[in-house]
Image (cartoon, rainbow, N blue to C red; front, side, top):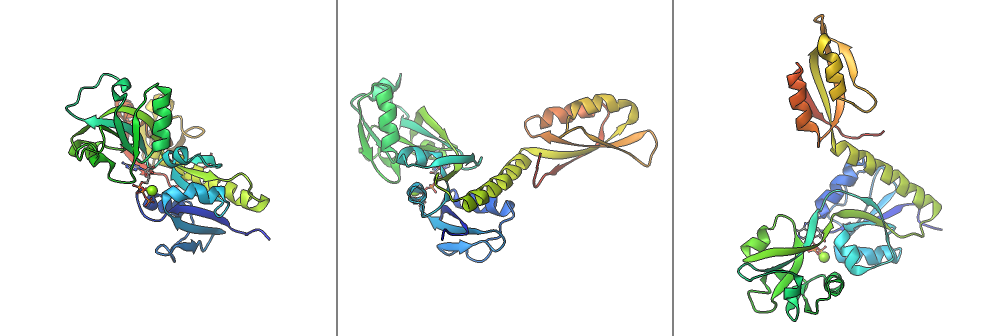
Length: 287
Ligand code: ATP
Ligand code: MG
């Protein structure tokens, strides 16, 4: 009898832990009792959560111990397991880059020919160097990769970078970006019909949360003679909502705007006579 719950593996502690929990909570899944255990169950969704080291998650999913997991794309590419990416999650963004001591000259990746590169991603680095026809010695180390050049262990490193401040503090500079990564939801492809249906429900909720994150709800007051221009600026989900204000000659306009266009739109709205502009976060968005 297959489990009647969807089993999800997430990072036990570390950079993806909090955002993974937050995403599940924003999906309306309650994990209150058990955040400090190794395994817990949601009280209001058929979901069992396993807390694991991120490196182990692809293997657990491939072995069907967990049905799905949340992990960085970088880990999946390094481990090469039989799992599929079902959803990009938009957090845990970083890049995998090559860095060298900041005073060292650098023209191209060919400067690493015959050198030693320290990394926790030996597989990805080997593939990348081979694709560039560069032969270098790869030293696999599992942590604190950024100190390898200063202790004489390597000439260059390849590590995850987000702001670049760790590299800077260790006297290194980034010279090549091998890949960009973010957290993703993965699954194995032998889900039973029922767990597959649960995964679809979870994905539906995740998509609603992701869309909401990128959009804002906007309310403003506008003189009626300016409405045609203002409506053109605010496409909304279908079209903006227009409600009359108590003061005659004025309307309240409600719409949804994408965060990328947000500041440009606000400027134009003000120029066209909009007043009392309110911008409100959206919790879920279903189109
Ligand atoms: P674990 O104990 O679970 O093995 P870890 O030390 O391997 O944890 P973390 O440092 O917590 O892993 O990083 C987890 C993931 O967060 C990375 O695999 C990567 O996808 C993502 N990430 C985002 N920004 C960064 C960054 N600046 N440095 C490292 N990882 C980052
Ligand atoms: Mg790890």
